[in-house]
Length: 454
Ligand code: AMP
Ligand code: ZN
Image (tube, rainbow, N blue to C red):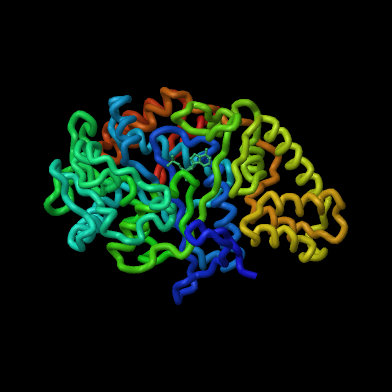
């Protein structure tokens, strides 16, 4: 049976299926904004999407799923952070990208096949904005910014039903922003020296130099890496409006074809009844919790313990419960024969996942078996279940050494120097890191830090 998943556009359960003749399932998940550490609310969304990715791989085959997740490395928040810290944008975004990768690895999230950055796709964004200007869907404002004209797209509001909620148009605000209507959104933002520092690029033809708006990055990167029509687009509920509504408008007006066949939005993680968010300051990072002695796997388990389409309240008690569930699973796994048994015993687990990604339902079905005991169950069949849930049962490792802020700073500076091809500075900074007892491992897309063995 095909995977049934709630589709936010049609507001109904719909089967997932690859729509292109090559049979590859095209999956895009909006990624993090890399200006600070991601909190475990963000990771609820990424861990749920990781189970989805794993389920798609089981369904269609490992080489028949293409998963793309972006890194937002230029927007109001990243630029705001460069202003606050008086440091180059790349230094800040590289540092938080490295932390994001380390946390994803600890939470056992599979890397997307492509992880494009907004700053690496300025050309593609400019091309798309020019396409929208030529087609009459976008206009240049007095200050040299470019806005999308929402009245030019009759389908605007279909995802969020925003028209039903009545957009309030106050022309005073529109004028202040140089746009025709307050609901028009920026595709390109003209350079403002007092706000943007040295962050600017050549703009679309006829516009000022500046930087892309946030929404256009996903439209442009999806077109480049997945094509004009994708099979599934996901993100947290807060992205439904305006981000995803705007992505649809941009992509469909430029490409003239359906953008995403299926939209899926997972609900937020709460603390004491309110959404966990950086701006509210009510958040935990993964390190906050591992520093308290909880394992990253327990955090993953706790984040998976609620239905993805329902809000989930986070408590430290849920981590205790997760550690204990993992302990039971570990003992059950160890008691199983390597092979034999009946694969079908796990059918209810997969049935729950196929039924609108009911992860707590799948965990419940799994624990019915765990509580019943190991009869008729093989380790290989359980391993398939653990794979799809992304649960690793190794004994929790001793907590990793924390990276001191001064070391993280040196590493970020060295990475920025290397990116700028200033190898003398990069080498000197590596010597400082070595002297302080840290080794820095460079990869194509970032770096990691390890304390050197004594
Ligand atoms: P951001 O880094 O702010 O762009 O967010 C990255 C992802 O985390 C997006 O898909 C958001 O919808 C999601 N997100 C933000 N806050 C929460 C939360 N409290 N619970 C679950 N997901 C969240
Ligand atoms: Zn996006």
